[in-house]
Image (cartoon, rainbow, N blue to C red):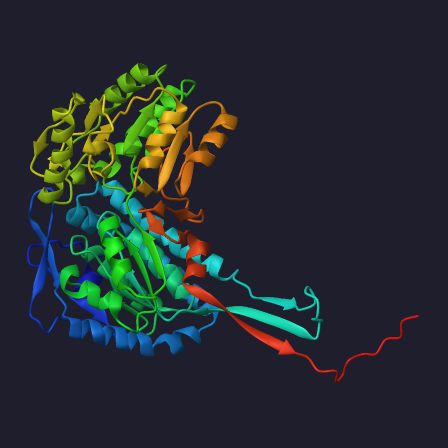
Length: 502
């Protein structure tokens, strides 16, 4: 496998039957099961390649090796670990075009967006290395409390958790896997990655990249296979010390139910609402809503998933959004069409079901509701009510409902009634009012005059309710993937200076 992958950055060769191995103990291996999983291009159905369908026995061996490797990696200095991440980032930059091309093929993301994802991950690795070098311990005297003196002192520093299981999503298979790997390694942990079945090929390159960057054998491992066959086994394994997962709320809740006492970092679904006030800048708002709703065909947890406009601007806003939506390019991801294929026909059927339910219950179709293969035309629905599924369920596709509200309070109530709480948006020229509304929204992050999105990557990123658990963002992830360890010094009177107080 290494020979094949090393050729790809220089002369990209994508062909049917290209088989990829999994990476464990510093070597590339074929599964003893003899089974593979086909990764198909969602745009045209062609096979991009195959990955190994690993067994639980192989998963166990990978975890055992990762556990045995914790000490050797933790013994590396922060500077040594940072240097490895920097070298890995350079390789990502060097290989961004071919890696982006592979990603475009396997998940149907526009080519320029796929290449950008590789470059963003390189920047994430660099920033994580820099942030990791700033991690410091602290010393505290005991004389803050009565009965204690400076004869008692706590020295605290951070230590790794052990083996981190990183489970990435299909929609950002490289970046949202890399955003788990980098802080885990910087904190001194070893890593086991389980990529998504659809979108498994591009994350496999982390094995090659980190191997070349100098990660010792066993420290980084990536195992492929069906989640239904090895997922629960990985999560429940007693030597897995923490799980970082990005995916659906349903899967995240299941994972939490079987993980036991393991620390969890969960990035789940959302139903992000844009509340648009009467004084909003409609040009700015329209641009944010359309790009937020339809970027990568709406297959983002932070996509704009419903718009709650005030009565004074609803008609004008909807007209502008429709005009801009009708100008979106549709078609081949290789030609950088904004609207490309959804990840599967099953997902298309789900999105269509939401549209059909809304139309049957009286919603007004403004545009869209057309499908060819896995491509669904961007769909706008007006006069959506809270009795419709589209008001509450996450579509993960290019459909945007407008729920007209009477006033700000009603918009807040509809937003907060959702089971999700990832992000919210407020569009207004009245910043004082925006701050007051933001405090009422039950979400992890509120965007003011901007679309919902992840990043910049040093910002905290989190959700409430069914949208997640824990806080991500570079320094927050490093802290989540390590723990403080304290030593208390009880000093004796020996050597103490005796001072006479007059």
